[in-house]
Length: 586
Image (spheres, rainbow, N blue to C red):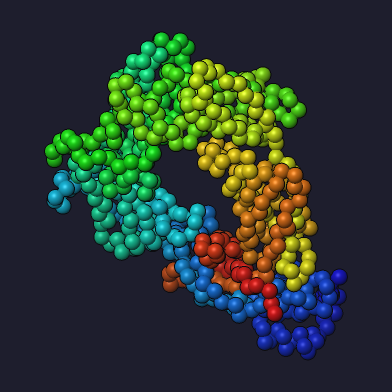
């Protein structure tokens, strides 16, 4: 039960003295009555609404946590769709206190930044020539997953114009040349470039290294055969920057261009389906990923007019005994033994070292990944290289159903085996129930909330295998008004997050949970106590016009990472109310 003051009577009665005093002291936003009952309306507290006995009234709302708790908060403020004339704003490390109003934050129009992209004529001079490119700007906000991004193309003079919020950026310069990879640079405080040109300069072509090689396979007669039309590229292990990509020619040769400063690189080969006249029907060659390597010291410099050339470590040739593959045949069935069609079968090896060929061609350590799809009767066929250990699994993840098979080990080591057979049993996730609870001091359910479970470790699959399988890893649900929800989950370890949707005074929750195959219930979502803080968003000009419908997110550092702990939308007066974690009141 809760107490509500009746106001529907036509005769106006004078307010009790203690209510008048409360309103005068606390102001219209913070007037409240703390109730003696065990139940109360959750929301604005005023002379008509009592809070829970364990709560206190802060800035017009009943809060579970204490006032006057201060911590550093970063705000991400994004204008609504109707205010395209304003740019987002990131306010970092602002001390904010529960139960208090805070200074006004402002949104300004984006900056119109002009710039040029030029390429150095050679590595030893600053002289440059215009370079056609597209520049991709990514805002460095310090807030995960909330990066402002935009792109601007250059004209024939290398000039571009970009509309950007005033902050720091990572700029990726995507060049149109085949002999120059993308160049990534950092721009500190874009605001200083508003009145002068932003000069983005890329290295001379002879700065980059041409990494060349040949992709070949060995046919059943022991002869080397070129692998044409294979996609080849390298990825920096240090920064993730990718080289140029290339498609192998008729002779299997390729050239990709890399930035030597970004070494070492992992090297990737993605073959197309190949036909071997000696082996009979066409078959799929597996993807091959070579372990991280650094281009060797220049072996054939081409001078200042072009890139230097380096070979792949070893003899520069990629050769794998694709002709000796063992044929693996199998079926995919569900828990009832019925065939599963259109299942994706994935086999991957650990890092393996392929044998040298008779031509003494060096082959680096690599990882094999092979894929297949089951037929209408659940059958599949794939070819795997010999003398290796594989992990094989199958999965179905579509609008109709979600099934996964336990990862199964398969060895192709025994000599003389030409075929192997296996059966994969794919089962669906179990439906588990859960409950969201309000802070322990109140001892009630949390009302309606959104819960998300992100799979970070599957009980039946190695993590790296799960990461390359294109399947669902995030599961979410909305609870009912009593905080109850159900969710189908696979066994494994999850990163869980929860946020209220009915204005409850809870900061967002983050934790990790383990789900076992025989579980029926999930650990409860236990929200922490929180307190209110508020402010106003206005336009950064002389008018000081409030900005309505702006999204405001509060981020704080928890356990070494930035986490969003509250969000709000400004009202017609530009006012927002956020919830900050406080811990339980004493």
